[in-house]
Structures are given as structure tokens and as C-alpha cells.
Length: 214
Image 1 (cartoon, rainbow, N blue to C red):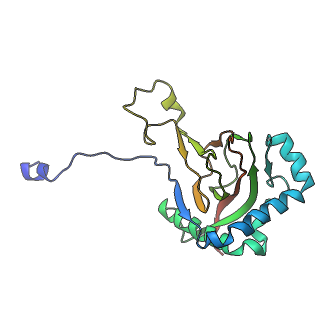
Image 2: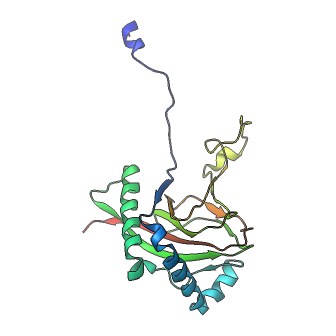
Image 3: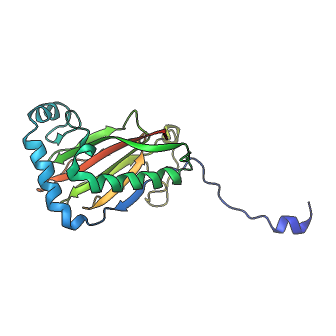
């Protein structure tokens, strides 16, 4: 190899196995926020079975996951569902998945209310490829969603880090903000710490799976 050929080569990092977290903002959210808050609270108030199951599985909080997880069929949420679909298409493309022959299809959309002291333990979303959440109402002290590094072998003997940053953390928090949408791989474990705010933390979660285009 000649010296000229060597001089054209560059040292650098090769990034492998990236975990992509996508952030987006729901258009026109400010005008719709109060309607969305009322929608979720009315859903909870009229969902007695959902409240009962939430008391067993979702301490102090409410989720419609057990009883009404197909809210994407509700006409009141049509514009938001359309935006989530568009975002899922972009997210799949960023992964370089085969979007010519497959498309992300929503299979769940459900509402969550975390009052004071409520939390959501570590979990993932099975039987899906893309999952996410958008925030309807967030108090000033609402807890951040926390993503867990999925590479378990890394926990064996970690070297000391020179400061805490998302790139070297074992748990990476992402601050919630009203109107923000987060999208992440369904296999990525995440949790929500206890809500210490006096205000409810209201969100809606969703799942997509990649299905063949018809």
C-alpha cells in the first residue's frame, strides 16, 4: 500500500447497534390540550373495569390498556393518530427497515393517568416493533421516562465514567413535556419513577407492528 493511499484513510469510531429514540411535537397541540385532558379523564371515570384492573397492576394510577387499548379507532383522536402514523413511517425509515414491502400498523393506543405517588415499573412492549408515548398533561415536577441500557453484558464490570451523560449511562432519562411524542423500539425496557408532583401526569401510549403492505 502506498503512502498516498494511507494518507486518504481516516481514524474514527464505528457505531454499532444504535438505539434510536425519536422525538416529535404534535402539531396544533395547544389548541387541543384541554379536549385531550377531558377525553382521558372521562375515559377513566366511565371505565370501572379498567379502574379495578389498574388498581391491581398499576399502583395508584389508571391505564386503559386492559380494557380500551384501541383508542386509535376513536374519531376524536383522528388527527393525532394520523400524525403518529406519519412519525412511525419516518422512524421505520431511519432504521433502514424494508418500508417498500412493509409498513408500520398501529395495534394499540391507550391512556394513562399517574397521580401523586403513582409509578410505572420497568417493562417493555411485546408483540410490537415500535412503541411510544405522547404527553397530554405534565406537572412541573413530573418524573422523566427512564430507558434502560439493553446490553446486559455491559453491567458486568463497567469502567468509571468521566461524568454522567446519556452516552455512558445505564439508565437514560428523557424529560416529558406536554405535546411531545417519543418513539422507541418495543424491546427497549423503560420505567416511570414515582410522581411526586401534586398534578396528574397524563399520557397516551401506543404500539406498532411492521406488516406486509397490501
